[in-house]
Image 1 (spheres, chains in turn purple, blue, orange, cyan):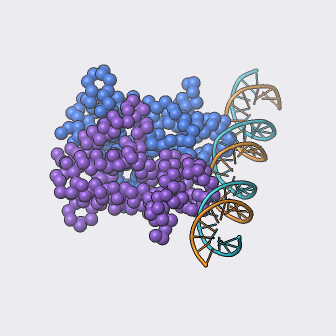
Image 2 (cartoon, helix red, strand yellow):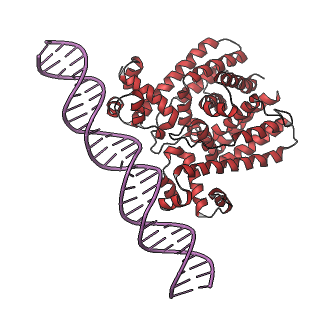
Image 3 (cartoon, helix red, strand yellow):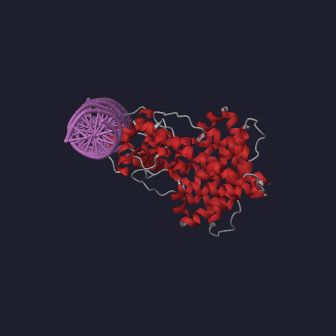
Length: 206
Length: 206
DNA sequence: ATAGGGTTCCATCAAATGATGGAAACAGCT
DNA sequence: AGCTGTTTCCATCATTTGATGGAACCCTAT
């Protein structure tokens, strides 16, 4: 109960939490430089200085947003791991793809922000600690890409990264791809799951 | 020889071309809102108004950059298609992955800008015509995902999109992933090719 | 040399943006 | 009610940023 982020996550109705939620949406949609503190404040319906009162400068708020979505994603992955534990690999993958895809379609800003993080350089780098390796290792172990408590080999990390990114791509690119392929929401979601299954499963189970 | 873009592509030493090249780098690295016209001008070593003289407003320059990289990518894909024409599918894919990956590692701003285009919303949408469907169809046909001159089925387009994006991800994320995995440039490139081969080929050739 | 078109830079503007100080409003407590 | 600490908003600043007008510059044809 120390940091502002912990406070916000504890009480989702608090002003801190409302601002954080809006910031997630806006940063996720327009990126760091594409989002102004005024846009976020307007989204919440408050004055800009209230935002500064709660979160300090823009860079700090962004950092909190990143930590926040990482916590959400980690929790979700842990949840999925419990569901699929013990099943044969092909089945595990099929279920995991379904679950994770559904989750991310509900919170597309998570995919957006993670991809932004990977690809974008901000002019003044916040360079924040990212915790990706955690995810990657956990997934690699869950997929039997490495034995026991050995350190995860590089090739395994790469495979996991490629998988995760394939999912994020379809989430973040929804607007563009749906427009391009002229698909309704539901059809798009189905196609995404099918395509991911088609592409990802054979490589690991052939 | 009508549009500014055609002029610039024709004479690579012209001021128009030098600005365009710098704009590609900067927009590719920092995104649309993350790049200022002053940054581009400084990169070229000219005054900001010279930039405006040649390319007009920022949005127009960005549009030209997008068209420019699309031309480059299309040309490169056509070149690769010639090399692999007639070979069996698995071999075609292996060679294509190698070639395209090498090319994009040389021009990472292409991957950056394409992914930006897919994922990012600009505050005031330029909404420019994009020509992606061309690529997609061509690749889909080249991979026998559809027969003759039939329209490309949605599932096939999705598969091609997933493939292309997997490549772009590793190019655009190089800095982040290399740092994370502690890899030297060459090792990273090798791992990327290996991972892409591992992930993409089985799905289409099993 | 010089007239004229094309090119480049200097100075400047208006709007947008990150950020803050201080007054007002609010909430809890006695 | 009155005090106290917290929260919210209004007004304002300094910088950054997109954009432009006009003077200087360069080059070529006459």
